Amino acid sequence: MQEHEVGHLFDTVNTQYFDYTNRLHTFNGKWKYDKVKGANCTSKNLAKQHEMLWDPEDQPSVEHHKHRPDCELAKLNKPEEQFVVKDWLRVISYVKATQQYPCIAESTESLSALMDKLVTNTEKFSALNFVKLFVNFVIRLKLENNTTKP
Image (cartoon, rainbow, N blue to C red; front, side, top):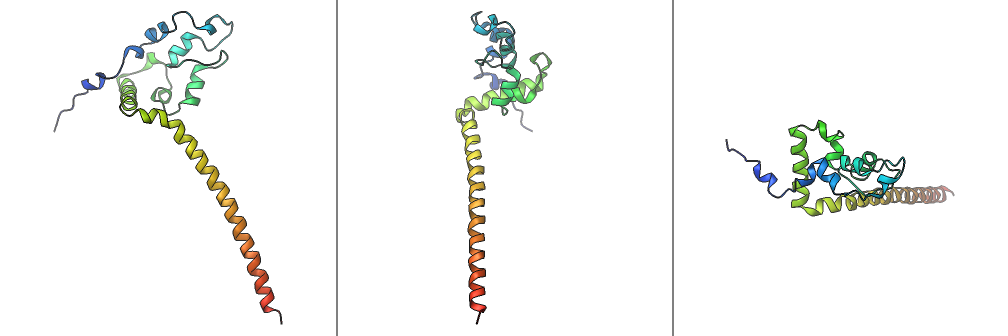
């Protein structure tokens, strides 16, 4: 049995922002919604969700799940404080894969849009095909009726 080392996974992954405090410091006290009374989209909430740049009334966790349901962090659906080693390995693997293949992260939305278009076109085609089949059926009936009359 061959041994596999996982240490190299960390070589190209920037782990600096895996830490909540480091992510929070990126806002540098200048996040405009921190000063808006009752805002949910604060730098603290954003840092907890590993995300940023939404409207003040947005809930970061809801937006994260809505916009990136494919993200491993969204799939984990728990606060960072509850992460176990297995969770971190999932996140690191996801980051590594998206860094190694940047088109994966960039094309997720494109693929989703293409699938939506395919479904819409299939529905249109099915409806159009039904109409075409129905018209052909009616024409055949009329032809049969005309040929059976003396």
